[in-house]
Length: 273
Image (cartoon, rainbow, N blue to C red; front, side, top):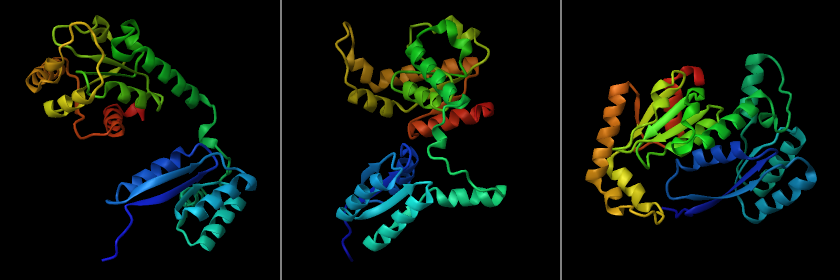
C-alpha cells in the first residue's frame, strides 16, 4: 500500500478576510485521518500584482488550493496556473453563487468583501460583543434584562467563549458563574426578556479542563477541591437543581464544540436565528 504524507499544503486565496475559506478548509480536512494541513492563507488578494507571488508560493509547495475570488479574470488565472502546476483547485464560492443565480433568476453583483459591509447587522454584532464583555462572569447584573441570552454554569463549562461566539452573531449574551454557597444576582430572576440556559458537563471533563487551567495565586484558593471529581459532582448537582427549580434548559457541553453549543442555544430560541 502506498505511503501517504502525514501533512499536506493547503493554500487558501481570498479577496476578503479568508474566514470562509479557513472554515471550509478545516471542515474538510478533519474528515481525513492521518494527514494534517499546513495552512497558507492569502487574504485581500484583489489584483494581478498581489496574485503572482501567491501562485509562485503554490508552485514551490504544491497542495490543495481553495479560493474565494469574485473577480472572474483573477479566478481564471488561478484555475489556469493550478492546472499547469498540476494541483487540485476549487473555487469554493462559485457553485454557491450559481445555485443562487439559478433559483433567484438574477446574476450576482460580485462585490468584493460584501459580507463585511458595515450595515445594521455589523453594528449589532459590535454592540453584542461590547455587551458580552461588559457582562462576563456576573458583571453589571443591573442590565440583565437587556440580554437576549444569559448563560449560567459552574466554572469551566465554556460560558465565556460561548457568549463571545453568540455575540459574533449579534446576540447579546451575559454569563454568570454558579458557585455553591454564593447566591445568584437578584436581577437574574427578575429578567423577563432573556433566554436563560445552564451549561453542564461530566465531572471528568470539568476536572480535566480545570487541571489544565493556569491558575493564579489567589489567597485561600484550594486547588485540590477545585479539581476533585466528587466536589465537582456536587457543584453540578447544585447547578442542575437550580435549573430544574427555575425551568432553565440545560445543555451538556461535554462533547460539544463552542459552535455546537451556540447552535443548540439558538435552536432553543428561534427568534435569534
